[in-house]
Image (cartoon, rainbow, N blue to C red; front, side, top):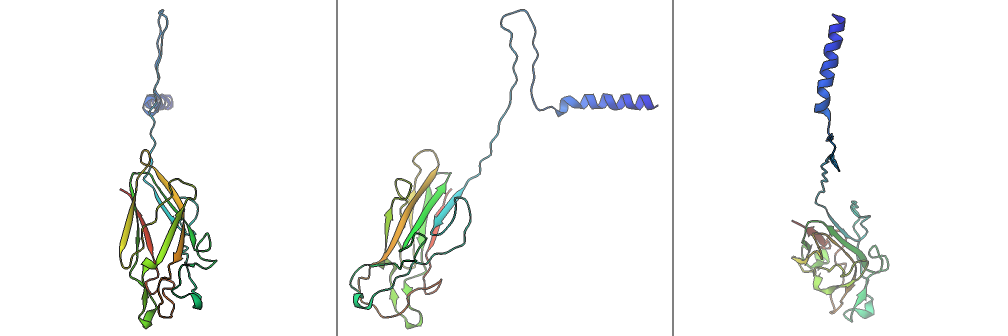
Length: 208
């Protein structure tokens, strides 16, 4: 009985070996010249769709960072309504009102949009400054052409369409620098804030 059991187990194991094999083999013999043997493999690479958007502090490509930068303007009393005012030195990750902007995607066209809830207000005082007074200068960072900026508008969403130069890959960035046009005399107050008084601009990237 013991010998018979061992023999049956060994036979079953040998029978299972061909079913477990994943590689192909071929044996040939003969007297011709040349003789050949072939073996084949199949390869598979699964690549997911990816979409990365950075405006401001952000972080390394393909990482999440919840930091929200503030762009602030202090208008000198003697210069109200007298022309362009630069942002404060600490504004933006690149300072002085400048931010890093970057979009990476691998499935064709990308729509980049900006949205606001309305004009900047000074709260209960009831005064406002239009987002049309915020200008954005676009400069090359590492990619050419530079990543364009969707126009800021009061209580609206505006968009720009990014198209890949070749294939389906888009990898574009830019240095966006914000200034306050300061084109009119306005009432005193703090317009905007930290996610208050319509201060927040939301940028969105969308890809098929």
